[in-house]
Length: 301
Image 1 (cartoon, one colour):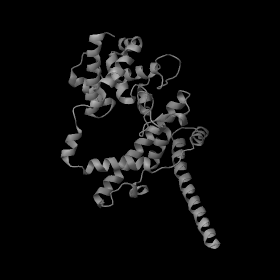
Image 2 (cartoon, helix red, strand yellow; image 1 turned 120 degrees about the vertical axis):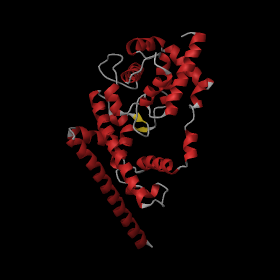
Image 3 (spheres, helix red, strand yellow; image 1 turned 180 degrees about the vertical axis):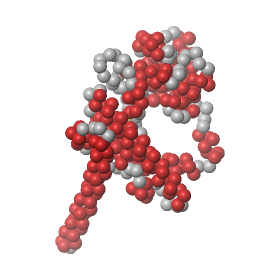
Image 4 (cartoon, one colour; image 1 turned 135 degrees about the vertical axis):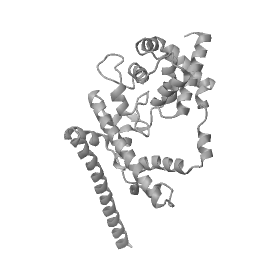
């Protein structure tokens, strides 16, 4: 009995060592790629050490499972998903919270409107839908989510987790291409995340984010943060967890995609769609903003 236990423990140690070796190899590949793309070895080693990131194939497999389910779902279900707008955000509780927030920050919001030409109701509507006015920022590190997606470029790493054992060769080719595409996207976002963090004196290991790596109260992806982030309070850095910077950044994004408060509904929806590629999302933002303007016209700013 004792001999069997010793053999079992020995095999477990070998298995754990193999897993650790594979994980180290995964991160070495990503780290070397980042260094090749211009980051200093010292910075990359420090970030990965501080983050203590663990490889988790489930981070990518969850996303690919959703894509597979969408691929195979019947047309009628796809149509049903395209509702007019998300009713959760136009109920009395959500609108009351958004209106209260708009009143509390109205001075800042009118200054943003004067500079970027984006009305307070639209900025607050985006903030409400993205993070419930800054209260839901994600529960896992953005760095870890992006690094794990970047490292998971082969669906064979998590095929058993997808729940689709009946995939034919054509489906597997599709899955491999989509997984590689998502991993390449995640690597670009990871590199942008590290660049943004370095330029703004932020520890990337401590930033919470969404499952896709979006962060801040405006939920910018890193490439979006680099392109459209604004130092709203002029303190020399862009902090997307700061209302001054985040709200100005939202307005800057919309302005640079063609927003004007005088646009038609159809054109406004097209601009909002650029923020999040979903027409249900765009119509929800539009409806929330319209309701906030209606409340403001009754009760004042």
